[in-house]
View 1 (spheres, rainbow, N blue to C red):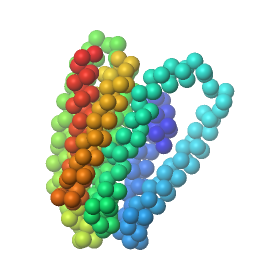
View 2 (view 1 turned 45 degrees about the vertical axis):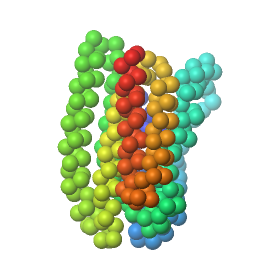
View 3 (view 1 turned 30 degrees about the vertical axis):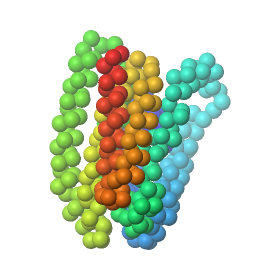
Length: 276
């Protein structure tokens, strides 16, 4: 799925990018609700829904990119340059997974499977915010790189950062206001208590957008070491939070841990980018 999104972005196909991102997120939300809430599969339902969503998206991507999947496009020299650039990020893939996907394992260990279901519903609701911030990231990246040589590029970058802060600030206020009513409408009352965790997770998705904005400067400098370091720091903070906060605060502790870890990425990346 990430490959076809990258292709759409480079081709400046904004509608296709947004459509695929939105439909993918909606598919994941619907499957999570189906397996966890309706079919009551608990933790296994989360795995089933994730696997099925990924499978459907992969089949679509192979079909859509069939003309690009040819050995004739192979360029050894270009591959070497790309590999050297991406090398610092390879070991961070595991750390990134820890930061974003391991909460359910810790919740299941410290709490109960019912709490896992509550957290997954909270995460699914919060992903509505991810659809918005994700769409911004898809559009902003290619445009940001296209104006890197312009005289007013730094001014544009600063204005986009301010605009992103204002708009997401308004959105998160609205999300926190309507999270509980939305849960009462689309799920059963027992899941309504997850609105606090959902609100915190929604904030973490906004913070991910800041991390993406910060990475633009580092990528322009053709260095990924700072990005890799920030992800490792984020993982350490997140895991530490899981151990100490989940037993005390429950799923809200897991959400706070994720938010704290995600905050480390833009803070560290912006600090390093300013030195470039």
